[in-house]
Length: 247
View 1 (cartoon, helix red, strand yellow):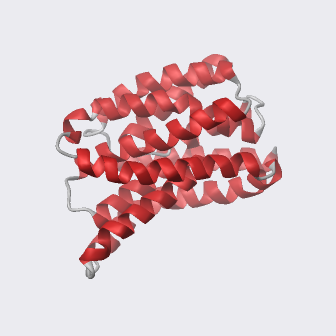
View 2 (cartoon, helix red, strand yellow):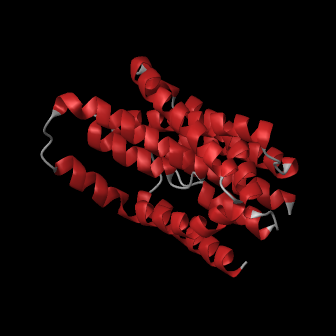
C-alpha cells in the first residue's frame, strides 16, 4: 500500500514538471488507501514539494534571465498559497468534501480545454498592454489561492495564463510555472506542517517519488505527446471523481 503511494508520487512529480495536474494522481490514491479527504490533501501538498523543487531544477537552463519575473510573480504565488492553505484549515471539512468534486471536474475541464483556451486567448486582440502586468500578477495570485486550497490543475491554469499574458517561449514559461507551483506548495506545506496533521508515512514516500519524478519529467517534457498525457490525466481524474462520490 505504501509502495503504491510512492509510485503515484513518482508519476505526479513527472506530470507536474511537464504540464501539471499531478494531484489528480496522488490525491485519489490516498483516498483509496483510506486517508480522509482533508488529510489526504494536506499530505499530498507536503509530499509534492520536493517534486516541485526537482522539476524546477531540471528546467534551470530555461530559468536563465528570468529572475525579475520570478520575484514579481513569486510574490503573488506566495500570498495566494498562504491564503488558500488558511482557507483549507479554517473552513469546515464538510465544505472541502462538498467542493472537491466540483474542483476535480473543473480541473479535468481545464486539462482538456487548455490548448483551445490558450489559442483562443492568445489569438484575441490584446489591448491595454500597460495593464497586462497587473492582470498577470492578479491571475497568478488567484491561481495560488486555488493551489493552496486544492492544487489539481494549478500548473495547467498557470500555463494558460502565462501563454496568454507573456511574450515568451513555451519551455521558458513551463520553467516559470514549475517555480511558481513549487512556491505555492512550499508555503502551503509549511502551514500544514505547523497547523495540520499529515499522514507522515505517505508524505515521505510521495516526497521521494515526486523528487525522482521531477527529474524524469524534465527529461521527457520535450518529447512526450501532450495528447497522451492529457488522456492519462483525464482517466485518473474521472476515477478519482467516481471514488470520491462513492466514498
